[in-house]
Image (cartoon, rainbow, N blue to C red; front, side, top):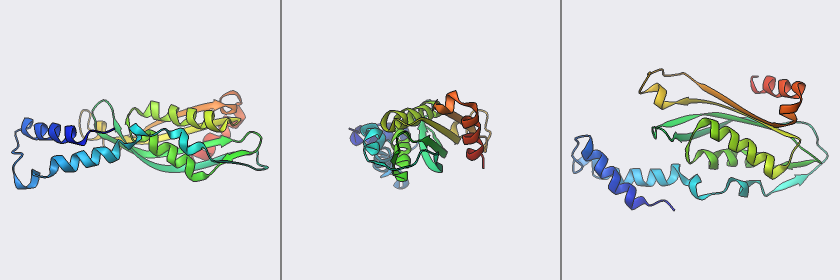
Length: 186
């Protein structure tokens, strides 16, 4: 459970630590607002992404299913600054077992709403889909901009980081892997 009171107190200390007046009109309610925001943006801490993959259907379909450009927002665990971008998820059903398209987006949301590394996010989405759907294979592509690179450090706004994870047939069959990456990049 997220302790909003503790976050509020910590934010008051942060305001004082940077030399600001926590009693200044514009900052009076900031600790409470930040606490509510953190409860929202870290809501994945208290949720299992697998619960969204419990609903599936059996139909006559054994070709690739691809959901592209799922928007996400997350917080880098190294600097607690946002990173955001798009996730594309593909899978090849086994025995006609598919899930609702929105379920893939929900899995992305839950995993992203934690202090995160992009590499872990990418692998966790692939592993969750692979475990829950048991498809022939899963491929995930994440393309994101990290504020820790854009607004501090090297200060390179617009630079993007791309990560991928492939499981099953997407790893073992080069033709299938090439097909999905061509579709990811369309």
